[in-house]
Every structure is written in C-alpha cells, then in structure tokens.
Image (cartoon, rainbow, N blue to C red; front, side, top):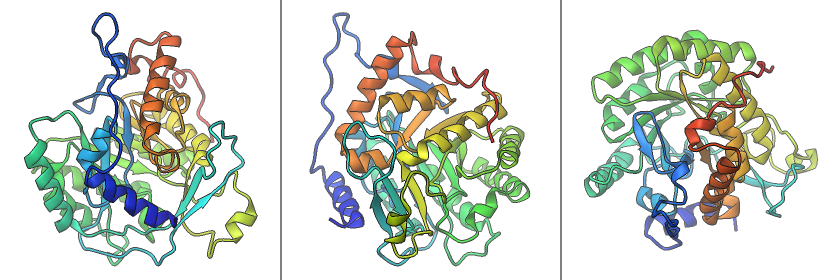
Length: 369
C-alpha cells in the first residue's frame, strides 16, 4: 500500500477504536505494576511510561484517546499551522531500506518524507482538542504536547504563526512545542539561528504566560553544527525553557544506497527518519545534555527501534523518548515491546527508575562534532 494511504488508514482505525489495545500485565507477587520502573516525573507531570508518539502521525489532533490505549505514555499532535494547507505534492512519503542491521527483519526501516506541514488548520485542531478535553479532562494521566508550525505562505522571519498558535491552542496543551527544524518548509530551519531563535523564544514565552502556565519546548534538527548547538543550549538556559526535543529528521542520507535515492523523484529533498538517524540524533542529544548541564528536560527521538535504543537515548540525557518510524514499520505491538525491554534493561543495569538512568553515560563524555 502507498505509505501515505497506509498512514491515513491506520490513523482512521485508531480514531474510531478499530484495532488493538494494550494488554495490561498482571501485577507481581507484591501487587505492584511490573513496569513501575517506567513511571517518571518531568515537565511538571507524571508519566506512566516515558515512551511517546512523536509529532507527525496525528497532525490534526484526531485520535489522542486511541493512541493512549495503545500504551504510549504521552504524545505530540501536529505540527499545526494557523491556516489549512495541502502540503507538498504527492507522492511525498517513501519507504526505504538501510544498511543498518535489523534483527527484527523488518523490511522498511527508514522513511523519507517531504510532506510540508499538510494541515487542516488551527480551527479543526481546536475543535478536536476541545472535544477530547471535554471528554477526558478529569483523567489527566496522558500528557499531550501541541506542536506548532507555520504556513508556507508566511514570511520567512515572521513568528506571528507561532503566536497565533499559542493564543488558540495553549489552553488545550500540557506542553507546547515550537517546530523550527522541519526541512520541508522553506527557510524554517533558519529560525534555529541564534538571533532569530532568541527573539522567537522571547516572544512566544511572553505570549504563553498570558494564557497558560505550561512548559515551552523547541524541536531542533540533527544536522546542527556544534557551535549552533552551543547557541541553542545557551538560549535554552537564558530563557529557562521547559525542554528541547532532539531531533527532527535529517537532510543527510546515511546508510541508504544512492540507487534508492536516485529512484525517488527529487530524492535529495525531504527529511529522513528511522534507524539511520539514530547515531546522529543521539550524538546531538548527548551534546545538548552536557551543554545545558542537565538543567533542561530533553526528549530523545530519532531511530528508536527497541528497548535498548530507548535506554541509549535515556543514558544520553533524555528524560522521555519518542518513536514514529518504528511504530509505522513494526505496528502497534512495538509500544509494549519497547516498554517491556526497557524495564528489563533498567533492572539489569541497576536502575530503580527511568530518572536514575538519565544522562548516566553523558555526564563524563566529551562533546562531539
């Protein structure tokens, strides 16, 4: 099936409750949750587990409850733009094989996408989030981040789209994310430069305080130079932002043959996710942990395929971990698989909780170019 058609069909199934739900494990002999080591607190919330669904799957906030039932500990919706836009021309999602070893035998372990913030617009997302919050607000056990983007037609340096997003959607969010790192909207990544990002964070933070006291996060690219990483870390500390999501997709083409890239029309365009992204995104994650001195909550995303990968992200400095490509490639069962493996690995490593492992292998490491 075409990758985007498969995406839309699976999202529709989750939205209407057609599909699997996580089976709860039996308590141990002491009556305790066997995955209690995965419980963690950060960003001002309690998370039943640190495994979340990254932005990009549920762009218009349509299936939050279904995602929770699959066993995720949290999720991001979006990226959401103020005005509806179709995104880039189709086809715009491509499945690829990489040279990274794959013990699970999954055929496609990386995705190239150039969707370009296809969005139904902020009004639709606002309606969907309102319905969800009115139905499930009392539960408050599944934190939801709202990821804000900007329209393709907006001026390159304009930040008004983000301010509109704050005014319209902050009331629904448990945390708010500024996406300045998608490679599929022209000039967007220039907002990661120090002067532009300084202004953006300042204005969005000021606006957010008028509406709701929730953490503000930024999502960065894996292709940043070390000097750019230093700049972002210094701004994160200067503005006391809630967290950094490391990372978005890469414009590089690691571990993928040139034959596959050449077989795709304009194969140099778009961002790559999945297993080939793991090493680079984890390196930047570790650098950001050191550069922020462990004072800023980090969310690790990029190439997480199993529980061992999740633990590596946590040991590199992530308090929370997100998946996307593994979810689309391995199916819903991957959520429980990662959690069970992570709980076992924490126990084997002598960690009583996720928080005990955060940054444990980054604290004494050196910065990497």
